[in-house]
Length: 313
Image 1 (cartoon, rainbow, N blue to C red):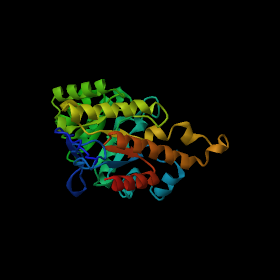
Image 2 (image 1 turned 90 degrees about the vertical axis):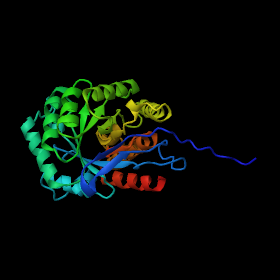
Image 3 (image 1 turned 60 degrees about the vertical axis):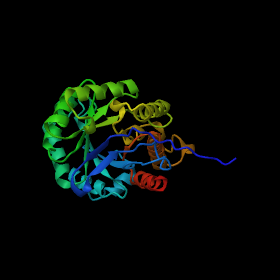
Image 4 (image 1 turned 45 degrees about the vertical axis):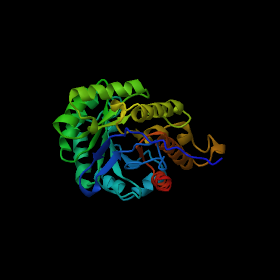
């Protein structure tokens, strides 16, 4: 008996969200099939890769990262170099130095950094906050203001500060809004609901539904991606049809597999190879499970993911 394959194509689709302007702009989402199911229908705009840089520089990064940015003396030069990384689609600026429990950099200093990055590259920009909801509520609206006209994605709009971030980014200054929730489909949907009730267009929202490094409760991340995509496509749930972006580097380069020295763990092999492996494995798992874009750091990771996306598309 011959095998007759049935198409698993849905009438619903993921929203298409554009970040950046001009020829460098990228679009996320747009697909009406499950991840990489090119044989069932359109993959939309395909998966995208963002390269993360930090206001704290590269002092604590892997040697491969330091080597790539060799000769860069300013954050602006790093941003330009990041935008030129082969396989990169957009640049992500992480303002972790603003954390009150860390360096607690003042908002004005951080805004000056954002301006410098914006002046240095015309690549699409994504800006992450410092993970402190009070500081981000003060910082991110000013980031949205200074990037007016760049159609940037302003991340870190959470349940506790979505009004401040959403109103500034999504309404006042015409940016895209990153809705961040903690690995739970109900929390993700509720945040999208309240953002749209605030007045932010659904087509201006990108979800960060949370993540973890592989082996660190990552099954919860996978199940959340699966449930979100099933509801968005199979049930035509419009409050879950936003594209998903997942910060990976911040999760993978801090776990013991990426940080333990070769002296402490001689059987594990070179530290940098382990770190790249953790970043690649986590990013790939996110992409094949439903994330439309991942945020990574190492040039080798970007090259590997870029090749994978091309071969699976």
